[in-house]
Image (cartoon, rainbow, N blue to C red; front, side, top):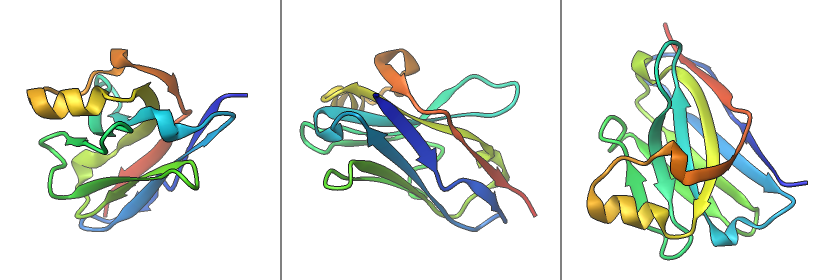
Length: 132
């Protein structure tokens, strides 16, 4: 059974940190790009970060550059999103999803936001709440 499972969300104060995990089962992440997206209540889903499998290229939305870091551990079949200096506006449900191996390289080189329509399998999401 092909499955992505996000974990690591929770309640954190502004300025705090969280590390989200996206663990795959039933298939290998080696051949897929992985994107992180988030959706806040009443808002559209937006791309946060993305990492290619082809060359390890990384993409970050302007709103999280310098604060979030994406990484992958193919041996553990897991992708991580380290989130530092969290702000209340980062509050959302965070999802990971698979994409073709080069898609994040494409976003990075074109300077365009990641698109949820370019991604296939999705996890169930993990809630991140930033509040004092």
